Length: 108
Image 1 (cartoon, rainbow, N blue to C red):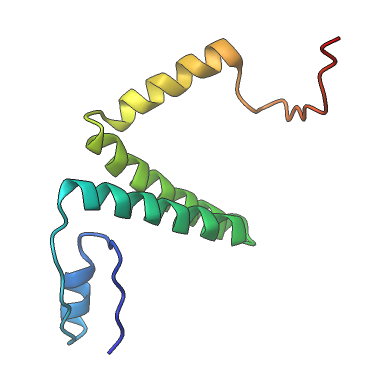
Image 2 (tube, rainbow, N blue to C red):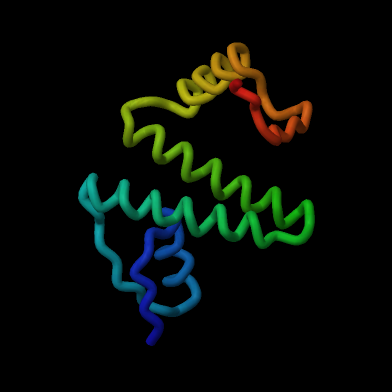
């Protein structure tokens, strides 16, 4: 019997049951939930970094975005609030479209 001990999407227990299996689950308190979301974010970023095709990369980015939606809610905001912050930072400091790679700064 495999043991997972990890945060899963809401419908996973239903899918497991539909497959004729039985899952043991628990509902996390807020602090444990945030910790598990952060852990899941690391997992998904690693999977994105390992992706070898555009399709796989987009799939992993979608997973990361789903986690960002959940994390923004834990901070009392929406993904739209996060997007507004992103836009303001891009307005002030720019984005990454120009592919600029900073080598060094002479501060003498």
